[in-house]
Image 1 (cartoon, rainbow, N blue to C red):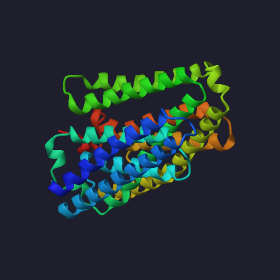
Image 2 (image 1 turned 120 degrees about the horizontal axis):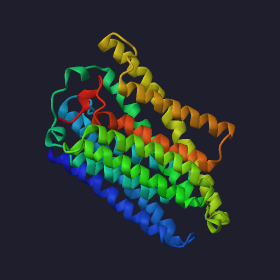
Image 3 (image 1 turned 30 degrees about the vertical axis):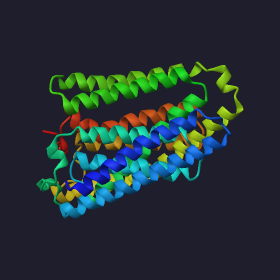
Length: 338
């Protein structure tokens, strides 16, 4: 990694931290104050600077490597942070959102930190493994990474909808569920002391139990919050933001699955082999197809759809990182950290 690339990547990380604090400050100002408006604009500009620096870092890495810069976990995390920041900038142009801003910044920071903690072999530019020496790599993988980032933003919007609609108990349950699932991913990546089946149970068990409890607890409503007209409007806004993010991510995931099948046929002679990661991608696709159907038909309330969106976030996390870090194996195991 060159000094220029490291400087650009670090600048993007610092920009994410700065935008996080600017957005947090905006939350403690008056709802219609000029300071809040200026803080939101400043947070967006700082986020944009980080996005541009990270874009330059990815391009610089590609030039240095003399290939498309998406071949290992570290590089995919850079792309994910880039897509998260870019996705927020995209939706922030249509909505005056600030709470999603600090959550998007926090997500980018976590993935920057996650990538920074990876072994040096992940940071170094290495020759491609034979399975990745194909033009399909830059056709198949980037749309998937961007779709994952948009699904994350949809899940975060779901959390904000729960908060603004007064479902604080459900919100707490879903945050705890995400934390436990993320802990399983972290332990699976960096520790050899925990048995694989325990990590799998932690992720899958917490996701299932958390989702069920989330649905059951929706009846517990903060009356003061639900009676606040402005809060109700903000809840509806975050419901719309989540839907817009899914509407962008879903066709990208569809394209990624189709091109993955074409690449699999080219490499292994079969369009579909029921590989664990392929199967999980299909489950994730079906979950968001159900979300879109339920949203269009208005068969579930916005609060229930928010829980579905958070469940989709968990499925996305499992599809993206879980199968390599939690030891599920399969034909995509070349992505596992040795």
